Amino acid sequence: MRRAHGAPVAVVAALPLGRAATLDAACRRLVAPVVAHAREHDLADRAVLTPFQLVLAPGEPEPDVVRVRNAAALQRCGVSNPRVDLVVDLDGSGSEQAVLAAYGYREVASLRRTARGVPVAVWVADAGPGGLAGLLHDAVRTEHGHPPHEGPGPGEALLAALEGFHDDTVLAALAVAPPDVAPRRAAERVRSWVRESVERLLADEPALLDLVTRRYVAPGATHEGVMRATYTSRATYFRRLRRARDLLSAGQRTPHE
Image 1 (tube, rainbow, N blue to C red):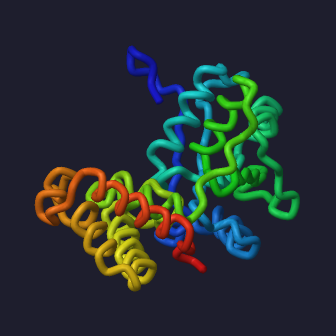
Image 2 (cartoon, one colour):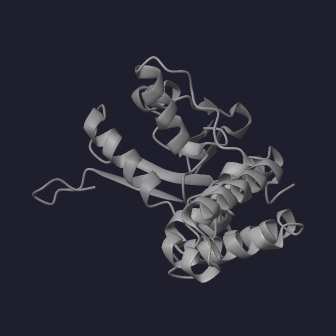
């Protein structure tokens, strides 16, 4: 981070947990215990490792600097909708730790140590299955007096994946997408899951399977085009499509079940 005139203010480095093994030897010595802790405690799902997050100027960090620094880390970390953030705190300042605690981070006392004479502490936050996006969404709902959203079930995730079947960005951002892989690869994995799910759940309804395949899986399809191709009226088409979506929503499992 730099000010408008170019003076550096802060530095941040954040990356998917799975990429930690590619760091050089010095960095691996710093983060290896953190990676081991995350895997041992099942914290590797959409996990972000933040090994460096420092304000360069002496004194207490400016609130705006902290907000922009943290936002930049989460936007560029390489994980769509991060769920777990593991922060390696090399600063040790009371203000930094207060910020972490205020955002729901908890220190892992067993990972306290010294690296080259510098105290090292590790803080962890798990936003839950909804990830950072769900956390922010719930915060907005709470401000407006609504209860937190329970989050989409696997059936809703399947329908969302169908709607965005040809958009890599949409598919890679879904909770069912594999973490720590490039968006294009993640999207292909989701597409494979969608195809298998649709074929399995609509195996006894070949007409509905054909309808869903034509509408969502075939590139460039529209409702009107599928209606013409299948010689169905608008009322019949949408009645069948609604039945197909109900079957898909009710019977779907997550990719990990």
